[in-house]
Amino acid sequence: MQNLSQLDVQGKRVLVRVDYNVPVKDGVVQDDTRVTASLPTISALLDAGARNVILMSHFGRPKNGPEEKYSLKPVAPVLEKVLGRPVTFIAGTADSDETLAAVQALPEGAVALLENVRFSAGEEKNDSGLNGKLARLGDAFVLDAFGSAHRAHSSVSGVAAQLPHAAGTLLQTEVDALGKLLNGAERPYVVIIGGAKVSDKIKVIENLLPRVDRLLIGGGMAYTFIKSQGGKIGESIHEDDQLDLAARLLREYGDKIMLPVDVIAADAFSADANTQVVASNAIPDGWQGLDAGPETVKQYSEALKGAKTVFWNGPLGVFEFEKFAGGTNAVAAAVGSLKDQAYTVVGGGDSVSAINKSGKADQIDHISTGGGASLELLEGKALPGVEAMK
Ligand code: 3PG
Ligand code: MG
Image 1 (cartoon, rainbow, N blue to C red):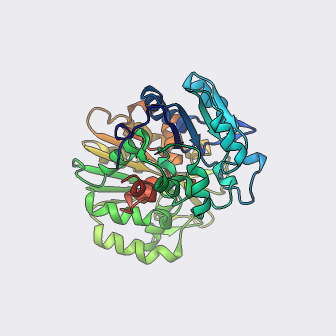
Image 2 (cartoon, rainbow, N blue to C red):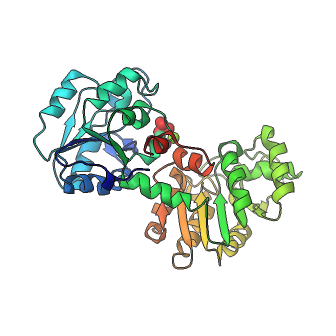
Image 3 (cartoon, rainbow, N blue to C red):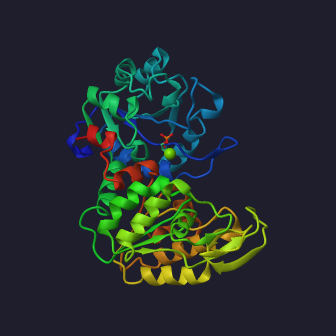
C-alpha cells in the first residue's frame, strides 16, 4: 500500500475515511476505541501541513436515507475531546451541495466530521455518481477505516480511484499486525477461536489450521464439533449442516484441534439459570452448555504456555451473563499474561470487549479494530480497501 508519507498533503484538503461505527446508546458513545485509533492519522496530516482534515464514516446500517438514530453527531464531541481541538460537524448528506459549501468554507487548520455516509443512496453500491460527489470534498484521500476495508463501497474504495490516495496509520498497522498471523508467525503458534457459529468462522479456521500448532475451540461452535463425534450435547446450540465439515476437520487436524472437555451446563438460557459442571460430551437432556468448564480452562491455559504467537477471536461462553463469563475472562487473563514471551493479537468485538473488561488490554500487542474485516483478511481474502491503496 502507499503510505501517508508518500502523499503530498501540504496545503491540501484531505478527505479521510475512518470507521466511527461505534456503539452508541441513548445518544452517548459507549466505547471510543475506534475514535482514538484514528488520532495518529489525523495528527500526522495536520503536522504535515494539511489545510483541512475532513473525516467521513458510516454508522449502523440505515437503509432509507437520513435517520436521526443513525446520525454520527454524537461522535463529534468524543472526537473533540480525544483530539483536544474543535471539530466542525457538517450535518448535510455527504454528497449535497450544502456539504460541499461547508467544506469549502472551513478555515485553515480546521477538522470536520461529515454526517453518516450511508445516508447517501449509492454508498453501498459504489455508485460512480456518488464517487464523484465525494471526490469534490478533498484534494487527496486517505483510507484509515480498517474496520470497513472489506466493503467495496464509495467512501472506501470508490472515491480512492478519483483522488491521490494513501493508507492511513491505522490501516497500515492493522494490515501489518494481522499479516504476521498469516506469514512468518513464530512457533509455537496457538489460536483460540470462539463464538456461536462454526459457519461464521469456518474459512478462517481452514486458512489458519495448516499454519498453527494448536487451535483451541470454544463457545457455541464447540458443540457442533462435539456432536460430530457422537457426543451428547443436550439443548446446546449447534449447526447440523456443519457436522460433516467439523468431522472432516477433526479427521485431518485432530492432533492440532482442542475441544472443551467439560462445560458449565445450564437448565435455561438465562443469567440466573441453574448450573452444573458436566463432561462436554455428556450434557443431560434439557441442559445446554453456556461456558467452558474448569478443566477446559486449565487445559487451554496450559496450551498457551510457551506459545510465541497467539491469536484470539470470539468468546468461550455467553459472557454477557456474569455466570458464564468465567471461561472468556480466564482466556483474556491467560493471553494477557503472555506479554513478554509472545506476539499476541485479539480481534472481534466480543473478545475485544472481554479483554478491555479484564483490564489486560494494555498487555496485548495488537487489538484489532476490525471485526468482519479482520476475519476476511485472515481468510486470505483481498480486501477492496487495501487493494485500492496499492
Ligand atoms: C463493523 O463494525 O463491523 C464495521 O464498521 C463494518 O460495518 P458493516 O458490517 O455495517 O459494514
Ligand atoms: Mg460487522
